Length: 558
Image (cartoon, rainbow, N blue to C red; front, top):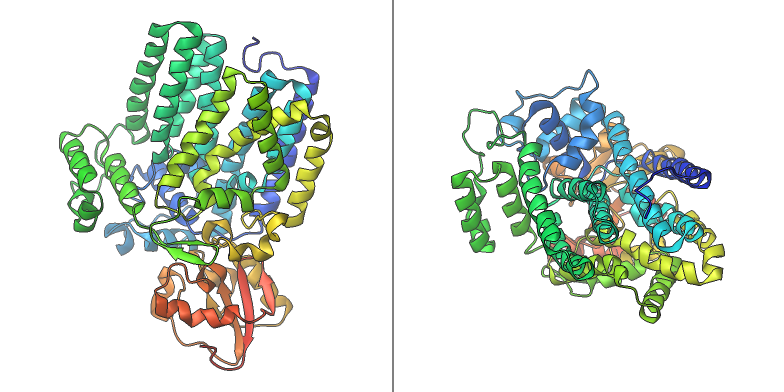
């Protein structure tokens, strides 16, 4: 087998160059039209704090690598203001400090565009990895068609354009499994190095990466069966364990404490928090034991505890129903309504081909899908398809089986995928397939990061300017700042956290703009949910980017 990317031929170079140009153009064309999504200010602030200040207290729910990568252009720029004298910094830091950093002290969009581009580069890298793997399995033309499916897949494209940890983990997890598969073909230093790098990067990016361990062990057992080499496989496992341990310390600057501030510990000690102790009592004891002995960095251990405790109970919405414990079928439904139809057809076709023409190496695509999807279905956190985004490149790899065996798929699948993307572009976050009526009917099935993640303030401002609306009543689900975009508004119930003191009764008669997540009342109590439900019975005068509805109201609607 040829070493990875050695002497690529002219056709490969052309295909990858065209792909990179198209992918970057699609991503940039989408993200420059969108305001920050809910999590982005916090991710970007955390990355800059870690990189420029070596402080890891900002949102410890995720390891900092992807955030540091995104914040790299900011750290290399001059003029970024980071107010360590702010009370929000000294007392937390908190979401309020992230808001101050982005929208009060700096130019939010200027920072956001540069950080988002760094994630787009990971999107290009993932496409290259997928192409090479598909080419080694099926040949050049099926790999090219598979790369086209990837380029036009709206869910991957959406999250490759956002400053979060989700897409970075998708890229690194796929790379780790790819190089592990290569080890079954050739036990070389190149493949071991590739596996180690991508595996460690994944562990430094998201706590979900712990799921790579059972995947790794299952596939290493397969490696032993195929190669009959036990000791090399054990050596690889040991190498990954040691490299991961060292990598975790490295990403936190080889320092135990999360901050250089005077406090010896966080202002809030998670393992002593009564709510978290009640939610995750066993994990609280384990993390307390680890932090007492300083076996791992403080922010990593306590962040893992916080991440797991918050995942136990989260409000969810599915097809008009509400639940705090989730549904086992949430993610299968989300996958079926948000994934382009051509990908779904080719996935089931690829599974049929795998069943008829079985090869052991197909497990390297099927096992990750089964593990990531299975764990997600058993969890209580049902807030977005992004939590199973990791399965998508493996899904495309399975779909490539059908492309390689069905001539019609090879010829028309890329064009169908491009057409499906064209129907919703540039609203990639709000992608729903045509079988359920597209994004216009998305809120009947899902909301939150599946549809409305706070991304449409720019489009709201454009609508106001076009229609001569100087001020609007606004219930906005997001963390971006309407004032930053020149939006004058009366904040209604369910507005941003920083605007809670400004919430008041709507100014009527007037326009009322409500984010669909608020309109569906996912995170509201029953009383507040009823406050907006009457609006669902009315036809909006405008729909802003599929995530905000605008109503003209003469008098109180509730």
